[in-house]
Length: 373
Ligand code: SF4
Ligand code: SF4
Image 1 (cartoon, rainbow, N blue to C red):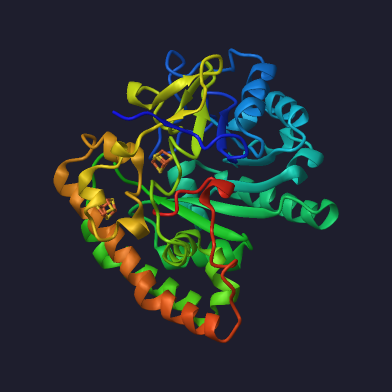
Image 2 (image 1 turned 180 degrees about the vertical axis):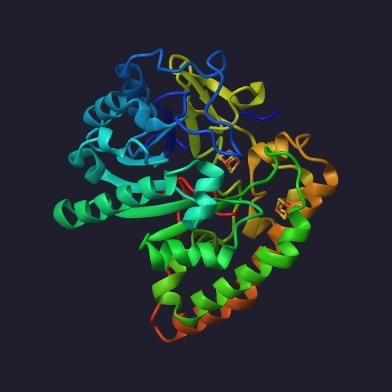
């Protein structure tokens, strides 16, 4: 297997920094946090060791706090932010403990992703009672903060999309009802027990996506960037296509676990193939291209899909092959909907001069998104 390395200084990697392996929720699709023998509850290294590594390999780091629930360890967040004054920062959080971090730190985040699924009943049924209202109170605080201190720049609703989600209703609720800047979502697939994804997608999800796509197509300049999966697919179309997984896992994104291991993907905490090194030993080795399977490299959708998810491709035994084929089918229909409904409207807007190519360029690593749900 050929060795591969990050592109040298100035690469601008996405660093997922685990502040803890613990979580304060037990969401139905997740189960809550990591076992302490796999991901220790608290960092076992000093912040200086992390800073030394980041400064050695990356002059434009993008640092996202992750867990577990990152706000269980606010002191660590403050220390890292104080020690890296020039980094771009973000956080993925369930927002329950947002009061633990002061305004000056929240305002410094370029991107905040708040985990929420949609309307109150669905969010609370899957994430726990009272979660929705806590997210709304965090969102309101951050919106007020932005008016006062200018940040955080972007507040994203990060949804887990499962069989109780009605995609049009829930996305509209988050964007128009609550006023999130953007939504991004991941399908509840592969690491949860198998369910009838294909039938649900045919009856509910894909028709809802088409409705959403038509909503974007009516005013592409104002709306495209608010739906991350659509924006990311259109960006890939206009910028030469994906050449690796859209999330960048293992090449342009790495995760630093609490025990100091550097792994390719923040979910791959047990898998040997994902370990790139440790804080002491990592010199920038990344995963080789052979981690994209042949079935993706030969797939005509690869330029706009990128293989969807490295972890799901390598650990494909979680779901039976039949369900993985259904997942591929859903991915391809999602891309088709964007090509059929959104792209013609975008092309017209480009011709009219309403949209420029810079607007059509989306960099998932800057927001820690995966693009393909
Ligand atoms: S649609 Fe499926 S097979 Fe095709 S590139 Fe995406 S993940 Fe791979
Ligand atoms: S999309 Fe898959 S490979 Fe990428 S970060 Fe998420 S779990 Fe890891």
